[in-house]
Amino acid sequence: MNSTMLLYNLQERYADAFAKNFTIVLLAVIIISINGVFVLIFFRSSIFYNDPRYILYIHLVINDMLMVCFSVILFVMTFAWQTVPLPFCVILLIIAATTHKNTPLTLAGMAVERYIAICKPLHHHQICTVRRTYILITLIWGVGVLPGLADLILLSIVRPLSILTTTTFCSSAVLYNTMYNGELTKFMNGLYTSVVWVILVFTYCRVLIVARRASTDKSSAKKAQNTILLHGVQLLLCMLSYITAVIDKMFVPLAPVDGARLTFLNYLLTNILPRLLTPLIYGVRDKHFYKHMKALFSCRLFFVKVESIKQ
Image (cartoon, rainbow, N blue to C red):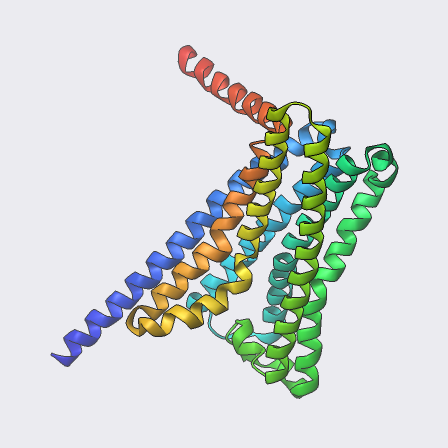
């Protein structure tokens, strides 16, 4: 009886693990494929890679592709490879943490670019050049990597250097489990969140005021308001990942039996699915991206149709 129950529990555990990994990998493939279409369209036309606004947008898309890829790798590794060499784990965690921080920073950069374009249109071409845009992207990566490097430096100070030759369960919660790392994470998240929100609230309010004053047509003013609100929604979706741990602490204790499933669902809703919605919110609404996307898929469908007729 006991052996039968143990076998049943093992089968149920493996089935649950397979379902989680299959779901997460499938979503990652879908997200990366959709984002890949936007990247392909971007590099097919010079109208995109000579415009700072589109350069920042495609950086956001590529960054989200990397974030999803490394996040899913870390998730699958928790089931398939539970004792990872620590240096390799640290590299994965730093890349995942950097891409995670880059998203709100890029949105802040996009908001500043829109603020300059609408509120200071005469100076836009002088300030927002392609060269300065790439400098800004480099700065974003430099700022984004700081928390990951700070965690590593703090770990090397608190723990002996011999820890670098050991293996570990590859999770930031397990690896950076000191009190100092926890306080540093809270401080960094609070600092990044505060700075990004101050930039976004200021720029969005200024753009909204200017759009209302400059627009004599009510429909164009309404369109400007809707665009700004959608950017706000985009930021909220991207910053859901900051409250993943808070949601886990609030709801998992209420249902301890289903704690693992609640944690997985929370991970999907706050970290993975927003990366599917954010490119679509911006890309599909843009008339240039929509026109090139329509032409791209029209050509493919026409090619398939001709092939089938010839057969």
